[in-house]
Image (cartoon, rainbow, N blue to C red):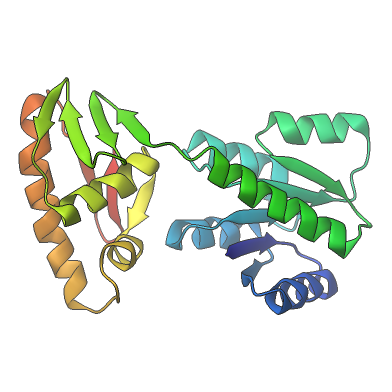
Length: 221
């Protein structure tokens, strides 16, 4: 399980990273809003632990930005802000849980586990966007009730975008999820598969489904 820690206090950040790593979590620790944005664009995380008082911005604004951009990762706010209004503000901005500092590490672990369980329990088996219906159980894709014949790799590629509509996905992230191991040729192969996917899906639409973000990756728009 992958955890992103956004915490500017050096001692606390190291403590969280080491403690979670010892419990077999894969941990990325960043200290600013800017680094958090970059980390979340590079890969997906199972849980994000977010401090609010960051050197280059407020964690609440960062959280709102994430939610408006289509990021759905569970977020646990870890903050010294301890009033009821603070907790309400955090939950209203899109947090899934709120834990006040100082805290028990065992309670933090329990809350992280609960968020991961909850995320797994509500995982959708049918994804829909702009008339596209992707069924994960029957492994079928329909556009306005018309079935589209996709290969298994094209299906996997579309699934990634359907889980992240509106979100720019990097070429590296897509390639690592589609191919068992990432190597340089994959990025060229990705262009081939994107071309095939566009050819099969876009003829029925007035506007393109996919946007190429030059130098970065692709976006389902």
